[in-house]
Length: 398
Image (cartoon, rainbow, N blue to C red; front, side):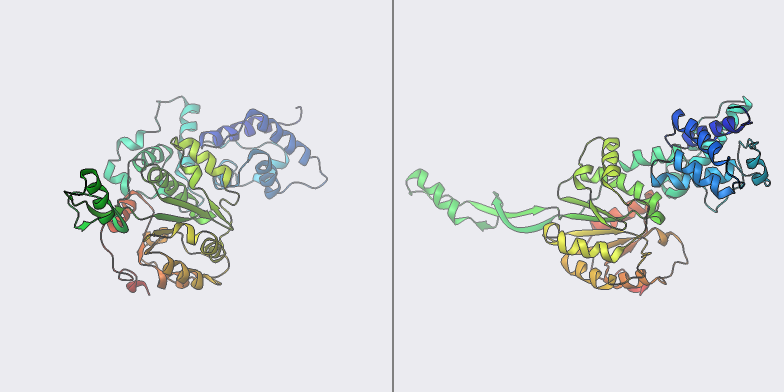
């Protein structure tokens, strides 16, 4: 690779940074990336910054959800002010270490990867990824936003999510079962028992109503704006799905996908891999109205019986500006016993219902809660464990 300067070396270090941030980048992709950049550099016109970006992302990325981490790593690693000239000369800068945040909330996993790489290059004292956790108590971790957690904190948060439960109160059904303390006499079983003694003695067989947990139906938004929160919420749903029966989980972006069967696997890693394979529109756009319409007409009658509780996890930012969303939300609210909307935007104190999608959805929900950290999930469990009068919690937002 004569004439390439330090291009292979810098691409190799950039790939190491991506691997440290959690992306699967093998040596074969590094070689292909160097070759692609060399071929692109043979054109008559000099390459622009975006040409380098799209060339490298096309080779190094395999999934669309990897792009946010790649974008931040690209801006930080190749951050030299005279980047264009150095790129054209294939004399790219080595940029390791902690850089200023390109966005207000930079991915903490990328920050940890940069910090770890800097410490390894300088050969200073060893710093473990869990160092931040040693100073963060359990209470601090519970209040921390999912989007600002480090890689070690995400691991600890997922472990805590696996222990959470959603205690929905039992409901009384129309079916009866034999019970000694029952207040109702089961005439059919009483006559059957009397035949055993020739009809001389008639023991009364009593029955009581059967109590079951109501069905739980979850509709989770997996668009780009919901990515860090929907991923953590799916770990929470995995724990719930394997803890109780009658749980149905659907995800939607531009289309609706039923992932109930995938979440049934006991191993969380296997379950999440199956979920990723089943979803074709992760971190894309959002068509809330279209997805709810498909759910109402295809799945509503199957899963919304017996006082079902519906959890709608979304920020309400609809690509179609709320077209038809109000009608589908009204149909969904009338088909279930309780409709709870979980919105991560509620973590902001000055949240206002200005987007058209939010205004169309809000009048039809029974409970409006945030979902951005562990404390918000604990508050959700407390809210669902007690009685709720329809619409009492949403009037303040209208």
